[in-house]
Image 1 (cartoon, rainbow, N blue to C red):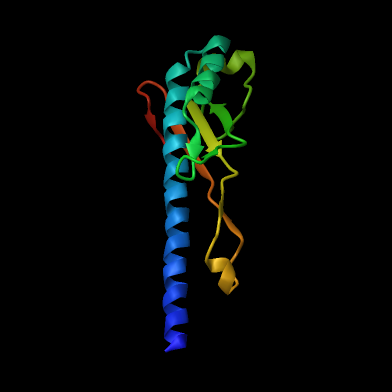
Image 2 (image 1 turned 180 degrees about the horizontal axis):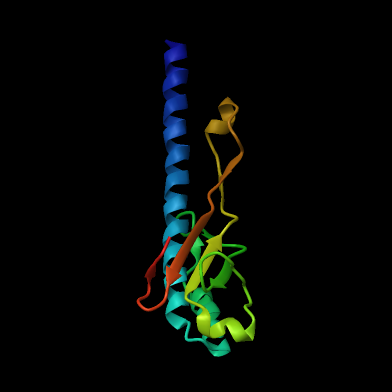
Length: 140
């Protein structure tokens, strides 16, 4: 009886922890999707467009883990061909830029119950999205 109770509690704990990881992953992906489209919508081939793209990402409500934490280390990159990404492209390449990529790499969800049975202390749930200009849409 006690073994089945332990097993039941372990399964409930796993469901709770993995549910939190799933929710955090969705929150991070929703943020990067919105941020990449906001950045791509500002690209107009000028340095001012790059500044507006970065500002658009910074202006988004950047909270995750059920709204309790802010994203840290968000990276905004730009590309003309989705092969070579740069956070600060050369001025002569600005007119060719067609893609904005936003990465939220450092989102760690603390594990509450799985640690008790030897699981990890946290899971990292990174997210990345790429959007294109004209029309603004998700490209990856």
